Image (cartoon, rainbow, N blue to C red; front, side, top):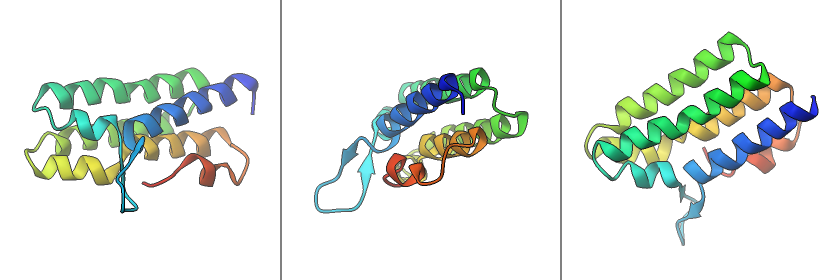
Length: 125
């Protein structure tokens, strides 16, 4: 993997953890991130989460990810946004689905990251 791709993957992994699993809920194995917290704010929070999640797509494009990988990333972003916008159900979905961590994994697999890093990069999903 080139240095540029490695750096892009690191940025995406840091971003996805911030968005999906930055805060561990004490006494549980669950964690939440900025996306789940933003989703609690009707409409504006969901739209903000959607726009922020697009960052992974931008990095995937820059890193040369295939059209298929980018389409899978878009599917995850849209699913998170559409289901996440449903009152109450969407809030629970945001805390469980963790689309950004899924998208980081897609990009890692696409770029051919060495085996073993995925365990270090993902805490939950």
